[in-house]
Length: 48
Image (cartoon, rainbow, N blue to C red; front, side, top):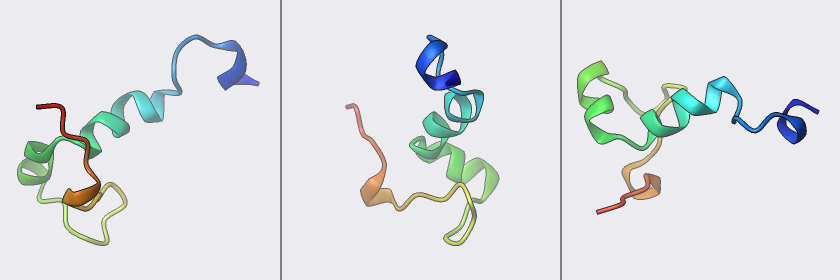
């Protein structure tokens, strides 16, 4: 119900979603394959 009635995305995805697509995040926090927030580079969103 929250997702259908609240105009904002759930807090988990407002923060974790963008970070999982931000390559400097991986370098800064040494995120490795197998970590919960790891997303393969080929699946990360690239805007430019």
